Image 1 (cartoon, rainbow, N blue to C red):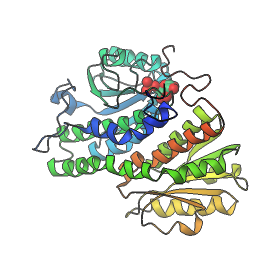
Image 2 (cartoon, rainbow, N blue to C red):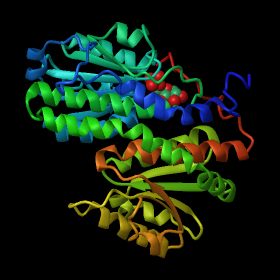
Image 3 (cartoon, helix red, strand yellow):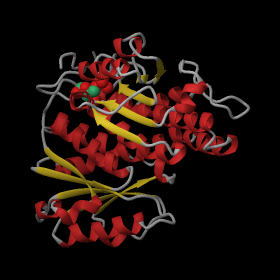
Image 4 (spheres, protein in one colour):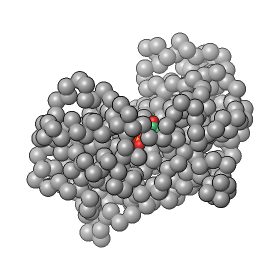
Length: 371
Ligand code: G6P
């Protein structure tokens, strides 16, 4: 009913607007006054966490893309190699896992069959399994060694939105916790990241407050045939997730690519007028930012309509951006929590304008309980 949707037309739209609170709730109470992370639900000893030599993240769909984002942060903070794998592929390729592997599963529902089978397979090999999950008491956390719950509240829309943001936040907490236990990051460094994480709900709200521009863009673009998304570093999984939203609910052909791969194939797809969303990393000391600006020029020179997601104050993109969607400033690692939001809203609005049932897209289920 309309009341259940809190005045929104779709659960999905309601859930997009709930994201500041969902992220705040996921972070709540995880950090004590001594700057020490407390993750009570992680019931694996510190000795075991110190001895792991590999992290393997296993998930499906949007949760898999959250895992791809997390890999960058976990490796950066812990210096432990981190692989991310689609759950349905993991089990059938004889993966190299043993008691020194920490397997992290990500699942909003906690009932996805492929992910559950991966948990069972990992535990038979002696690996420890941590479940990142949004549903209390669901099957995956029950069968895991430890659980870190996201506190997003129930997610009804089939296409995951607040699930994604809270999964990224929870993975970051786990990464910081591992770094703390293993001594690769210390109290004040962890506190700096936590403070930044805690500033994200207000910044997500700022992005939501600017949603009219995204709705106008959807109005303009909803009859296109195909949309590309480009990003680098953590912006690459954001591009994949932005494309997935359009496929799931708007039934549009959409692809996400690492911007650096453009010249190895995807640029051949660019036709005059084709919308290309580009996620621009914050200006920093590395050259990522400038490389992405070059990529924007390259697609624009072939006639693409460039829609650029970029931090406030970065005017270098202006000459090459047909549309600029501004994001509050943050670090590269945290930018996905902001950059995905306009892409979720865009997909929701395009699907609405095309007359589709946003909450119950054709052929999809909220939770896929068969392999
Ligand atoms: C289905 C849903 C997706 C979700 C995926 C994984 O495909 O439609 O939105 O990302 O399952 O679900 P999980 O509950 O394991 O996160």
